[in-house]
Length: 88
Image 1 (cartoon, one colour):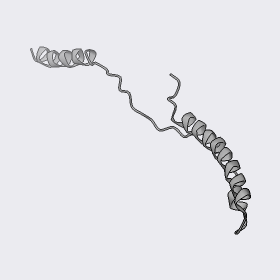
Image 2: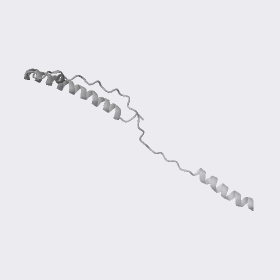
Image 3: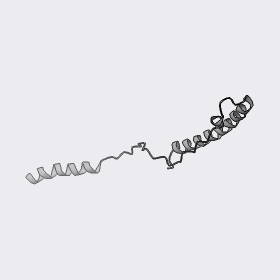
Image 4: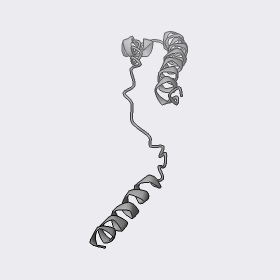
């Protein structure tokens, strides 16, 4: 009788362990970005001396616009590589 009182709760406890349900949880894990930052170019307008004529300043400003567009494209590509979801 004592044996039956002891075995009944033990059997119930073991049966409960077999019915344990597992759940999958998706959690974002930060990953280091390994893309190298593009080198910043020397801007043509920074090299101009004070008092330069308007024609040279406009020429340097136009060249700088092209350089900035290229630099921004490189920065956007690096950012896209760092923020893209990891392959599954």
